[in-house]
Image (cartoon, rainbow, N blue to C red; front, top):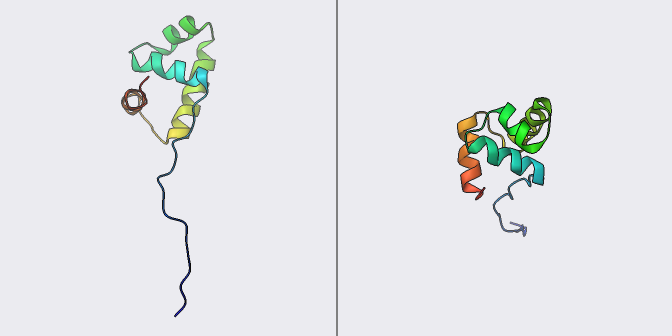
Length: 76
């Protein structure tokens, strides 16, 4: 019988969101629409949509409710 040493299992680190992604997430979690978020951030609605698609992919979430819960848990 041989024993192998393995590194202790650690929790996976949460993906890091870019500052603008965090800002977009904060606006959406506060109840703003994509258009309102875009206006407040000085961006197009399509750019905000791209940020939110990246956030969903990074955090493996699908709904706005999940994004809101994630924003709260991240302290945004």
